[in-house]
Length: 71
Image 1 (cartoon, rainbow, N blue to C red):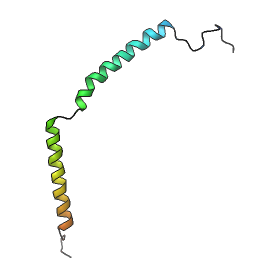
Image 2: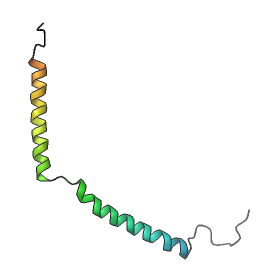
Image 3: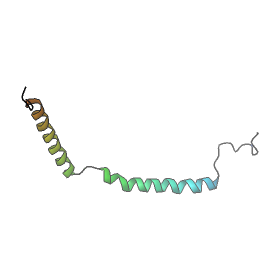
């Protein structure tokens, strides 16, 4: 079917722009408010350090413990 309005292929109308622009702005605002929730604080770095130390200790125990019953 031929294009009823020649020269308008791929162009957006003012209604489409009026609907899309507020959605994009709202998405940007939501993104800006959500990003700080994913940033790491100093407390989480301490927790990460403690978890790493605990994991190392647990691995050392698993490797060096002969098990039950001892073999």
